[in-house]
Length: 214
Image (cartoon, rainbow, N blue to C red; front, side, top):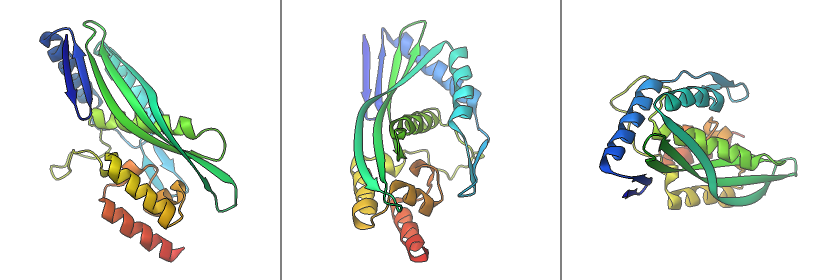
C-alpha cells in the first residue's frame, strides 16, 4: 500500500501505477472544467459569483466521466454565537471538511481538507458551512477559476486557510470590532471570505474604512 502525506491531505493507493492513474484522471477533470462563468448574483451587495449548484453540476459530470467518485463530510465543527443588530441570536459554524476523490477502478484515493463558514439565525448554519467548504474546496483542489488566465495571479492557498491567521482575523472582527460574520462580508463586498483577493492587511483596512462610513 502506498501512502503519501502532505500538509493539505493524503493519497492512498495499492501501487505507484494507481497513483499515476489517479493523478492523470484528476488532471483530466481539471482540464474538462476549465474556467467557469459566474452564473448567480447577489442583488443586495451587487456582485456576481459561481453558485454551488452550477459548480456541482459541472464537476459531477467531469469527475464521473473519468471514472472517479467524490464524497465530502464534516470532520470537526467550531461554534459560536453572536447577536444581530436587531438583538436576536445568530449562530456561526466553522466546519472542517474532508473531501475524497476515489478511482473506482483501482481504489486509489486522494483525501483533501477544506474549511467552510456559515451563519444563520435559525438552523441552517451547519448546512451553509458544509456547502461553502465543499464549493471552495473543489474550486481550489481543481484550480477552477471564474477569471481569464493571468500569469500574475498566484495559485497559493488563501491566507484564511492558515489556522492561526484565521483565528486572529475572526477574533479581531468579533472581539475588537464587535462585528458579526455577515457584517464582515458586507464590508468586503463578498459572499465568502475566500472571495476576497487581497491580503489580510487589505481586508482589515477595508473593514475599518467601512466602519467609518456606516
